[in-house]
Image (cartoon, rainbow, N blue to C red):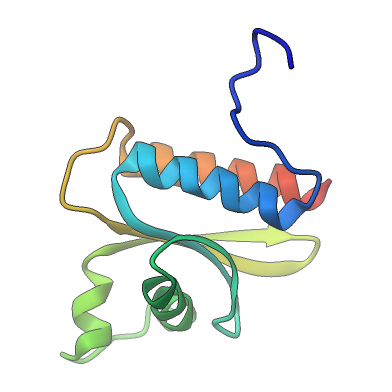
Length: 125
């Protein structure tokens, strides 16, 4: 491995590589979770507790429609998440993050930009 190599873990498997990248972004953003989901609410890749990743993935397609959400757990959680749509080979995917309690070393906007770039780079390869 080169002395300039910044990554500690690598994988030739795209889903494992994506998991490693999302784990790093979760740490840098001090997030509770970050997940990539499809439009059916299925987890494609994620970092954080598995139940939270599944919950975020299930709700992300609802939140991305921007329809009014009544007062409920779904509505309350919406206030705690950031979403970004990503088109991969004609398939619409959603990156969803839930903020943690601490300030990360990167802003929410930076994390979303890096997540989008990572998803496109890893899954388009």
